[in-house]
Image (cartoon, rainbow, N blue to C red; front, side, top):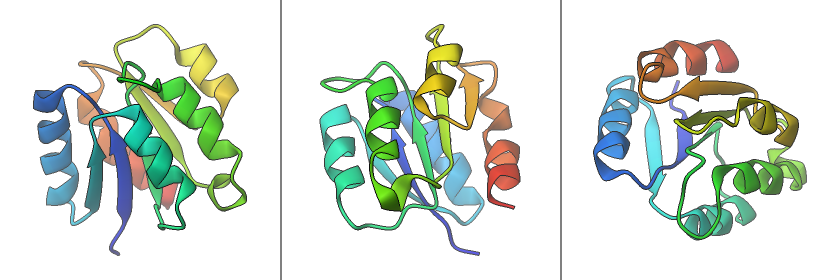
Length: 119
């Protein structure tokens, strides 16, 4: 199954490690280094099977991206994972995130978490 994931992460090293990990699963990753770019992608009609956001991003933070995504009828059921070093798990879940993973310790949980959310 070919999945498309919208991934917003400004830390280039982390972004490339995660992107390569997800692409090794056969998943397509659309990477944004800036929250404002992610906002434009969310507002589009592009189909994303899952949204993966860091919280600390330039221009628009991950929590705002989660809230923004949940405002669109075509994104209300899209699974969202917040992957962040910030202490914002409760806020992320209140905003509408399905899962919260901590950087760096939970990076190894990304693939099983995505698989579970999409099964």
